[in-house]
Amino acid sequence: MSGTNQRIDGKRLWDSLMAMAEIGATPKGGVRRLTLTDVDKDGRARFRGWCETLDLKVRVDAMGNMFARREGRDPTRLPVLMGSHLDSQPTGGKFDGALGVIAGLEVMRTLHELNIQTEAPVELINWTDEEGSRFGRSLMGSGVWAGVYPQDAAYGWADIDGVTVSDALDRIGAKGEHPAKPFPADAYFELHIEQGPILEREGKQVGVVTGAQAQVWWDAVVTGQDAHAGTTPPSARKDALLTAARIIALVDEMMRAHGDDGRGTVGWLQVVNASRNVVPGEVRFSVEFRHPETAAIEAIAAAFPQRAAEIANANRTPLDLKELFLLPHQPFDPGCVGIVREASARLGYTTRDIISGAGHDAVYVARSVPTAMIFTPCKDGLSHNEAESIEPEEAEAGTQVLFQAVLARANR
Ligand code: HGY
Ligand code: MN
Ligand code: MN
Ligand code: MN
Image (cartoon, rainbow, N blue to C red; front, side, top):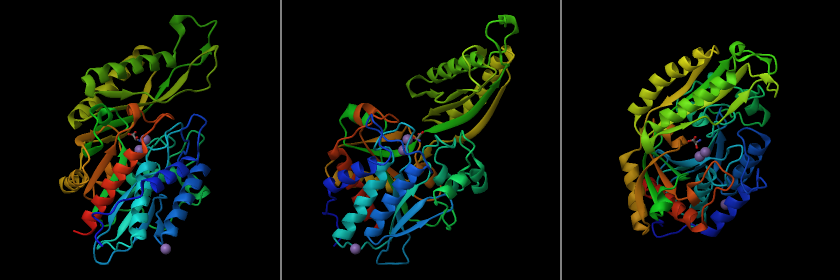
C-alpha cells in the first residue's frame, strides 16, 4: 500500500499533543520544559515509550539527540528524517517544537497501523536544546550534530547556576554513546508552528517554508562600580545599568532602521548583586538581531559592537561583547520544498511561501541534508508565550502534509 490516499488520525495526534503538554504544564496553559531538566527527562521518556510501542529502534547521541528509526524495504536507501524539539522556553507554549515531534510520531503510528512499508527507512528526531534559553545558544543539539559547534565546547557551556551541558546530560542520563555527527540522509522535513501572524492574517492553512532568516547573537557584560545610592553624586557614578539601558535603546534604533523586516531584542538581563540602594556595578544581558537578508545582519554585526562600545565608554563603564553565532539566511532545498508544495496542493490546502522568522533545527540540518519545513498558523501569531495556541484541524493539516511529504520522498 503506497499510502498516498491514506490519512493520519487527527484525534490521536491531538490527544498526544495534549499528553505531552501535561509534562511541564504551567498554570497559565503553557509549558516549562527547559532542556536537560527533570521535566525534559520526563518528556523524553514519554516520547521514547511511544516510539518503542511502535517497534521503532531508538538511539541517542552524545548530545542527547534522540533518533527513532523505522526500517524500509530497501536497506540500501538513505533514511528520510523528520523531527523537531521537545524542550521549551521558560514560559513557552504547548506547540513550539512539540508539534513537529508529535506529528512525526503520528506519521510513524499511521505507517505502523496501516502496515505501510516505505522503500527508504524513516527516522523521527527529538533535537536537544533547540531553544537556547538555558545554555545560551539556540539549536545546540542540531548545531553540534551538524558540526557548527564543537562538542567539547558545547559540553562546557553552563547555565546561570554553573551547571554545564555535560553535567546536565549526565544527570538526566541523556548522554548517548552515538557520535553527535551528521550521517548520510536523503531528506529532512520539519513541521512547526509559524510563530508569527502571516498565515493566520492571510487565511492560509499551510506555510511552504523556503528558508530561514539570518541572525546574530551576543552576550554582553557592562562593568561599572557598585556604589552607595545615597552618597554617590552623578559625576562619580559608573552606572552599568544606565549603560545597558542606552544600549537597549540602540538595539531598538538599529532594528527600526531596517523597517518592518528588522528584529532586535534584549530578552534577558541580570543586574549582578542587585540591590535597590546600590548603583549597579555589573550588568549582563543578551542581544540578538535578525533579518531576512544576510547582508543586513553582517552590516549590523559590524556596526553594533562599535556603537555599543562608544556608549559604554562615554559612561565610563566598559563593555565586553561576546559574539555567540552569526547565522546567514538559510535557503531550504528546492526539491524538498517542491514536495511540500505538491503535497499541500494534492490535499487541497491553501498555502503561501514563507521565510521563517524563527530559527529551527532544520536550519543546521540543511547544511548537510536536503531540508524543507512546513508551517501551520498559530493564534494571533503568538509564540514563546504560554497563550500559544493552534486549532486541532490546523495541527492535522500540517501533519497530513508531513505524512505525504515523507511518503513521497521515501518511496521515490
Ligand atoms: O529563537 C528562535 O528562533 C527559536 O524559536 N528558538
Ligand atoms: Mn507492534
Ligand atoms: Mn521551536
Ligand atoms: Mn522556540
